[in-house]
Image (cartoon, rainbow, N blue to C red; front, side):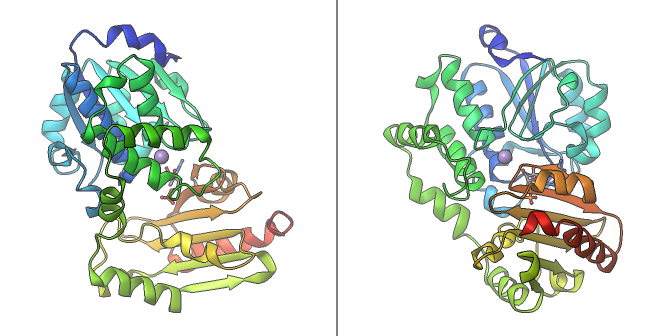
Length: 335
Ligand code: 5GP
Ligand code: MN
């Protein structure tokens, strides 16, 4: 994989560009994809964003989402656009299988593939150019760097600013995670000086839900959370019946995993949701517990040091039992 800087001089020639990201895109995935979409469109490229799956309502407000193709719904159209592409940008993921049903298609494409991502253990041989930097707060921060470092800081408009800010806010836990280095605040200061209305973005991200979601959260915290003080660990296991009862849609469960971190002394939070096709895990830690290694070792997953995810084909009951066993195995690391 060649350095991302090597494509800067190639940006002036208009190309057919596809931007894609991980399945069920969150604010960083969608924000980075759309910020890059607006930027490359301004430079004269013909750009399409393809999401491997649908996305949550709380990213649907981002400028440009109406033009995003959902691969599961528009496969034939998306495949035709992918076949024609000169460049494929892969944002906020670093291994093709995180695009679910798009995986085989991406592998067979012969166009130039470019990676911009901040997760651990990238599959660099699959990309021609790129940057993979785990010290970055978010992929949105990396898109900001891409625009500025390529000499195009003057192109950052309100649309680009809102998309970038949304991803930065989401991936830094509103500027609280340790990934929030000083450059993140300098980036925000720059966006503010360019006219960003940060309060508007917070409202759209965090105060934009239906009543059912709040009641669902109440139910989960009351009835579905177990705390293991001996292991400084909290576990939330959400059965399918809750998802049905509260009409839970894509993205409604985002952020739930963070609630137990507010309990004194909690070092690890694990949340599992009984989805149709699999049991999906999320892990969050405080301080010295490596969620990435844990997710890779026990739940076919990965991510970052303090935030990761994984999956299981076992039943909810079985995968929860497996979690409890792995928690006990890690007792020394959790104390
Ligand atoms: P979340 O819990 O919010 O779904 O994911 C937390 C972090 O772990 C995100 O950065 C996400 O990209 C990553 N992640 C989530 N699930 C998986 C997975 O199954 N495999 C890998 N490699 N990373 C994941
Ligand atoms: Mn991210």
